[in-house]
View 1: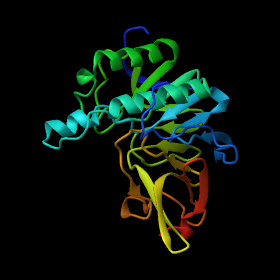
View 2 (view 1 turned 90 degrees about the horizontal axis):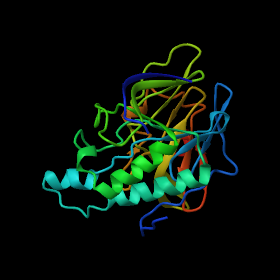
View 3 (view 1 turned 120 degrees about the horizontal axis):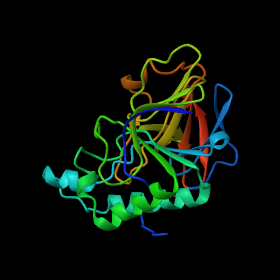
View 4 (view 1 turned 30 degrees about the vertical axis):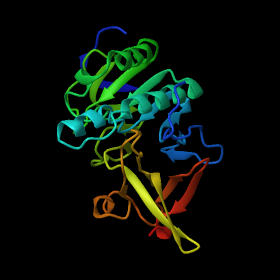
Length: 250
């Protein structure tokens, strides 16, 4: 495990009606360069070999960010996202926590945190080695929440970063940024959901945040990222993950 820390930080269940379920997949494991990645119904990924929990696109304070731009939505996304995060951590008991960028919806998001939410994050980072990878929404380190900041992190032969990029020979990549989702037609009815998208070289994780949407994996943004003859998705259902090849998607 190696990281490129830019700036070290100072030392180190709620329920909501819209909160997604969580729980490790009992039947699906994603393999990258021989390393097991175990997806969680929440959209997180657990790496058992290093007891590392990966979270992409948390987008904390999205509600307050939208309100500042005139879109008035209920400001409860941070509460819901942190409640789900706490439940996933309690279930998986990681030793390391890595956020893959866009953890806050804008560069001032961490400064807008309610003190109760800041305390919850500090309680996590005080106990678990935590890294915040730069995102396009939050390129600078978050303030007063603990952990370490990095542009990217190398986990074995796997590069962890926010935006998908060129993968060097012999390496694989895990990224977020694109908020993957998919549509599958079953019995004439379209089923839509967030998903994990992957082939043998790259995994793009779904957005974890309560208010985050999706971008279909059939859109142009994904066209050069996967070997489509072997690429698959794991769609997040109500109680299980559902595996489909790209060829089945609408």
